[in-house]
Length: 479
Ligand code: C2O
Ligand code: CU
Image 1: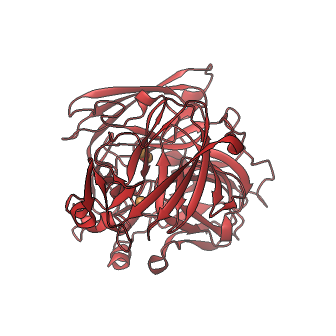
Image 2: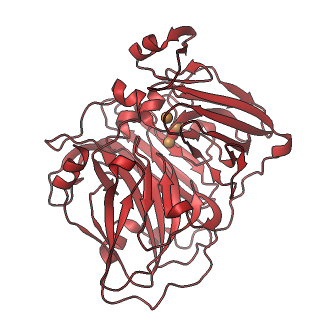
Image 3: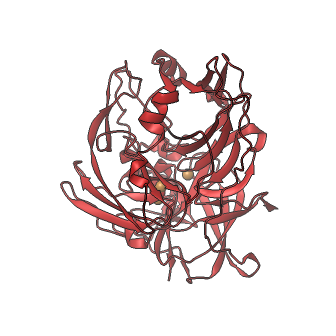
């Protein structure tokens, strides 16, 4: 059903060149000229219903919820070290908040309902203000009933520019998302159903990039693109293969990483994760190259084609440096760090027999009756204010040893910090990459290390939003 629906609604839409740059790749730069340090950038976001051409410009408009009525919301851009002040107005019929995913904000600006702020009631506003400490690719989304609010289209990119950005011909953002559309072309209202909660989440049937379905992206021979990928889907993991192109990963979750080719040529991005690529247009004039998403073996599909005009921009891509300057993250002292083990259990095909919900032991069946299917160290979360699972001492180093004891993938996200991914199944990782969301495969053990340098109560949860709702969430306190 999935693929049939996809191709039935396939529309041709050319995006690239001037259109792409003008319409969505580059934010107005005029606003950034001549600024002093610590300048404040002001924005207004209105969370409200709207309509979007998800199926392409000639397709029917689909009712969505979006910031300023659009999906994605505006791409916010600041320079590293600048302050951002964003007034959010809620014109939905329910409470909302905004979380600045991956940005190391002060706790009160983190946008977690009841934990860090009172949710924004319909008709009300809240002003978020914080400095952007790290350059890189981030995004924003609600944290209130995220499995519905994010799914309906409330999200946008937040780009923090390096003081001296690397040289590229185009800086392009692709926010990937999938939608579960009905035959009538509306967003299916089966949010948070138990099947999605206990399996791999709400996988959609229509893929969009920046809120539209498009199947061609124009490249000019010899050009160099910085491609910022953001996975805004509730549940879909992307595994992108770029045909004869060899993109180089230069940042993960906003944080610079040693430039490297992705393993097996495949860029794997779980929900909420980001990846910055250097994409050199090395294809032949007049040719087309199909980009595929190969993550789910039974659901592989063609995301789009790169198309080349007959006139290259230059003979070959530039050879200027692509390594990004590191952000100022504190280096964990792994040798002396205290280790905490975190055990994830639950879901279908698992062996979880029961866990504690609101202090009461429940068996799996009672859990499912309460809409829950997952446990973290034996505890099922309900709401955003559980007793903290861990209390960490400020400025100390910690290792979290994560054990995925389930049959499913889980992108685990920690608020307020970035961590180094140091080991997978006991083996050191090649780049010790900084991430804020780490994808665990079924049965995998992953160790992450960080300095708990940001005081407050921070969510630690699965970013498959149906899993989060189904109990896969907890709080880590830093005091
Ligand atoms: Cu992107 Cu707790 O979220
Ligand atoms: Cu999960």
